[in-house]
Image (cartoon, rainbow, N blue to C red; front, side, top):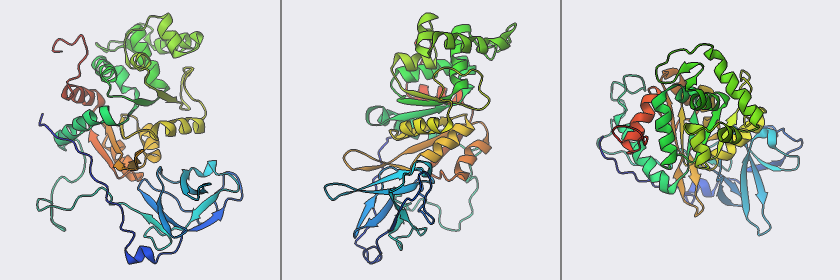
Length: 382
C-alpha cells in the first residue's frame, strides 16, 4: 500500500473586508412565537460553515447541521453566541435568523469553499471530457484507502472517530475480529448502531451464530432462528448489556470490546426491532438527540452498510468542526456500502462532502485494519 502523508487542509475564511460584505445589512432577526415552530422565512441551515452579520460584525455558527434554525444569544459580556437548533426544539421567545439568500446580501453567508485548494496544472480543465467520474464497483479506491488510513493514524492522536455500523459486521467471523481489534487499538471513539448490530454481535459471541447461521461456516443451526431471540431475552433478563456480558462470560466481539474499552455507543430503534435490547432508545427523537450528541464530538465519521443510519447521520453532520482554540478543520465523512444506490443516496440528501467506497464492509475493515497494522491477537499472520 502506498504511503500517504496526512495533513489537515488550511481553512480559508471569507474576506469580510470586501466591499460587498462591509455594505451588507445585518441579518434580519425575529422572535419565536410558539414552541417547536419556526417563524415564516426562517433561515434553514446546511452542512457548511455559515456566517451571520449581527450588530455590524460577521459571526460563524460553530456547530451546524442540515435543516435547522439559527438561534441568536446575546451574552452578559456583550458577545454573541449562535446555536443551530432543530425546529422542533425551538422555544417561545428565542431570537432566530430570517432570510433565504446565502451570498451575504441578507447578512447570511454560506461558505462552501473554505477548504478548497487552488487548482493545479494537473487538474482537468473545464469542459474537458473524461471517463469514470462517478463512484461505482468499477472505481479504483486504492488512493481512498491510503488517505483514510493516514487520516485514522492522525485522528487516533488528535480527533474523535465515530463509526456508524450496520449488522453486516456481526455476520462475518473475520469482520467481528478485525473490528474488535480496531477498537482495542484506539481507532474507535464512538459507535452509532441499531438493535440488530448489537443483538447479532452478542449472539455471535454467545452462540457463535448470527440469525442462526454459524458466523464462520454459514451453516444454519437447528432451530437457529430462535438464537437471536434467546439472546435478547437473556440480556433483558439480566437488565443490561454489561450485566449479560458478565453473567454469560462473553469474551469477544464488537460490543464486548466497546464495553471493555469504555467506548460510548448509541443504539437507536427501528419499528421492526425484536425485543429490543435494554440499551436501545425506542423514542425516535430521543435517539436523534443522542446521535447528535455523539456527532457533535466527531472529527471523522465512517458509515458502514446501513442506509438509514447513514442518511440520518449525514443529516446531523456538518462539513467542519471548530476546535477549542478556534481553528476550523474539516469533518471527514465516509460512506461504505456494497450498493451503489446507498452511497449515492447520501449525496442526494445533500451530504456533498462525503467520500464513498463501494464494497462490502467485511473486505473494507480487513483492508483498513491491515493497513494500520492492526490484526486480531490470534491471527496466524499477526
